[in-house]
Amino acid sequence: MNRFLIICFFTPILGVLPLWSQTDNRGAEPPATNEHPEDTMQTPPPVTGANYPTAVAAHERTNYLSYGVVFTSAYNDNVQGGLSSHPISDISYSVAPTIEIDTTTPRLHWMGSYSPGFTLYQRTSGLNKSDQNAIFDLKYRLSPHVSFSARDTLLKSSNVFNQPSFGTGVAISGGAQVPNFSVIAPLADILTNTGSVDLSYQFALNGMIGASGTFTNLHYPNPSQVPGLSDSSSQGASAFYSFRISKMHYIGVTYQYQHLLSYPATGLSETQTHAVLLYYTLYPTTHFTMSFFGGPQHFDTVQPPIPPLNLQLPETSDWTPAAGGSLSWQGRLTNLGGSYSHVVAGSGGLFNAVHLDSATSSFKQQITKTLTGLVAGMYTQSKVLGSPQLTGFNGHSVSGTVSLNQSLLRQHLNVELGYTRMHQSYDGIPVLAANPDTNREFISISCQFSRPLGR
Image 1: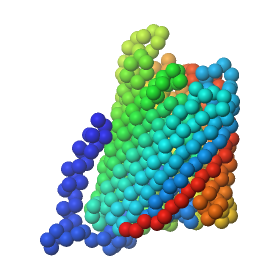
Image 2 (image 1 turned 30 degrees about the vertical axis):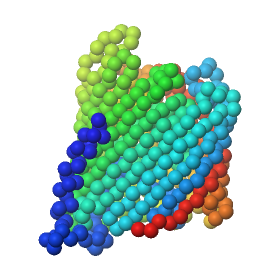
Image 3 (image 1 turned 45 degrees about the vertical axis):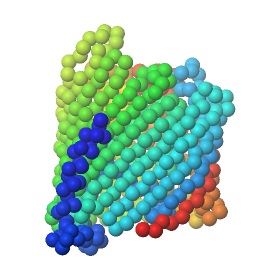
């Protein structure tokens, strides 16, 4: 339903906007997008919500079809978390075929990838499960001054470490409205779906307006695996105005709305937020971006009765500051990214929406022609909105990954060695409280083949 409403909202606009760029010459095609590239404004990260690139510039490419298979073996010292009285270690084996296509034309760029998989455990065979990863990303320039983009990510997993972000570094986003997946049940069945659509119109040489819609869904198919956590969902909408002071400097304002839902066993938690944020973005070079945003955010939240009192609590309403910043530098042999935000966000599986402080960082270096190193980390702190009785659900998460990737056979074969550590402190969440630490050492061997695609 959420996706249906977003499509219904944007489809009439998409039907009208191409007409703006047509001429009277029998419906001639609009000019190519590179007719005046120096005049085209960029859409600043605080309003797009898109992730920064994680590859070094030397590895970036377009117009290709890639396919292969990835084999991973890992030792995990805590495969059952709080479901056991003490940590249980095990060795896992995963296989995942992969296929990815990337197509670029002067007006269109779209990328799609799909990777099913299966994971086996040497001792705890009850954890054996299949995985699904699918990503779709489209950018289309309807006219020289009107752009549309859409993204959707679907993940069905039994092991959070099998997510692509744990193999390539954490996702770095400069957005002020991003999904909250910071509370992590490491080895539990999980289904997440995240999507967004964006529309922007450059109405003047240095002026741009735009609108976007977002949705996220978090679902635990087997609640017995995640005692203390619950399903959640969110829908959001925003509008922005951006002004280009110079080629390097952008300023603007954005209004953002969120409808945040959480589904604990005692009922429905519902929160609505409204925020007006000012932002500034700096583009020193084509591969370096730095952004800051800040402003007031208002929230109204209603939550179900809290055991054991089972008293219906009154609606909570308040103002809170929202702020954040991010940077991305993509050099030929180096990629560096980082972000921080303080906002009201979705529950991420907790009892209600939260005050979220989130910081992420990623550093990737091509050491030699065939050897690449990665260091990535994430810190989040969640404070549940509403009654003081919910402080037991408050907590924080810290994770870090280091890895080395060696390319062989003309980059068709890659061998990666890595280590991940994760610590979570949530005293009121049984699945996390008993054994909060996880250490994982892994080796991954991937065979990848690709071929260029013509236009």
